[in-house]
Image (cartoon, rainbow, N blue to C red; front, side, top):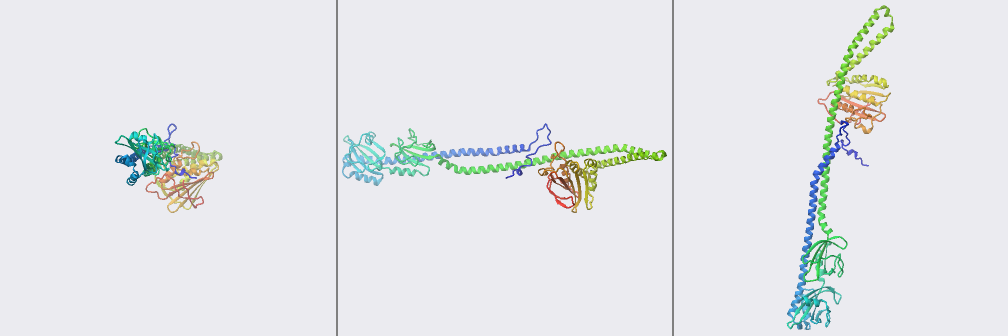
Length: 599
């Protein structure tokens, strides 16, 4: 299972313990979120707006281009189909005007003209001549029979009324598809005749197939009723009704989005072929148009996603780095302020101890003098010289005075070294001096205290007051962690040629593994309630680091804790300030070197 906690920044769960109960704690997480949100909006908003504008503009451009293209193709195709029909109608008109009715009905004449038409322009499959009585006077090809009379309402009536006629595609006598064009020619005698030509529909079919350059497109011709005159790829075969709505008037090319019978949007170009019952349609699915637009857009979207991911990663990284730096600086500031406050408190305690010692020494001197005088008087007075009980009581008073004097001397010695000064010190004497202050508590709680050394311990230059404070904090924490009847062991040995190692081990409740890496952080405390401020070990770590030494911790729950302090015999020229514990070589209780753990 992926452990995401290791990616969590140091400030994420930070709680500002320095904030009072009436103040809202300062949240680095909230500041991080504000920085990320503001930077993301400011950075990505213009990019997304530009992408959206580009999306809309390019889509409109593609749709406009597609509309213009369809309009242009339909317009050109309509002109070509119109020209093709007009050309063949003009050929029939020329034949009717240059030939008399008798000449056209002469044997072989119509067949010769059909042969010439097929050779010159192609497409004609038959000709016939119809007189005013609707009788077919002559024919060439296989589309009609001689002496047949045309029925009313067919192409004859339309040609007579309008002067020409273009009919729908229909089945011929041989079941082939054909298209009929008819023209009326007036005679000088006052009569008229109609010349009809039958065209093969393959002209339309071939022409429509040339319009389809894209497999998604569909081009076909319908009549006014919407019946297909050429086969369609998607809308049916010839003579089937195409379920598409045609405009009422399309003398000009019209292009618009409509829905096909399946409800899908398509781009339809519609134009009416002049002087005919036909409509030319070019259908292009919207999906095909969008494919042309979408292919370059996909690349742009991919680049946009990559850019957004890179920008977000940069924003998160920079915001995390900056807030981490702010958090570290704030921690150093708070740590320094509390360390100064802590040092001031100790200095105040030292001054108080010095004052108390001086004040106590004066009455002690008087008591010692008077008790000595009483002893001398008892000794001189023969009556009292043999009173051993009185002499014993005086001896007890003098012994208590000496003990109080020793305590005041310790207080004076402790307070005298509160001010920072580098001097020659013996670390064992300092530790025993600190333990002397804890002697009564150790006796009261039945805590066994032992100090062991290995080899000769040289004196070295250090700040006596700092050493006293370091070991007082460690020993005081050890006492706080143990129940009555515990054991405290201090082991001192030399480490290498230039260092000295001190191990303070207790049999207390220990520290959980999850808390080991935080024991040196300011305000972190494993004591319940308000028993601890969380500054003792932080200040201790800072002092050890300033002296050029290292401190590490090794602990097991319910089995005890061991702090290992390693100090240089030669103080550094420049105080080294560190803020995170480091792993150093520690020393075991048996005098052998052991590998310390990071705390």
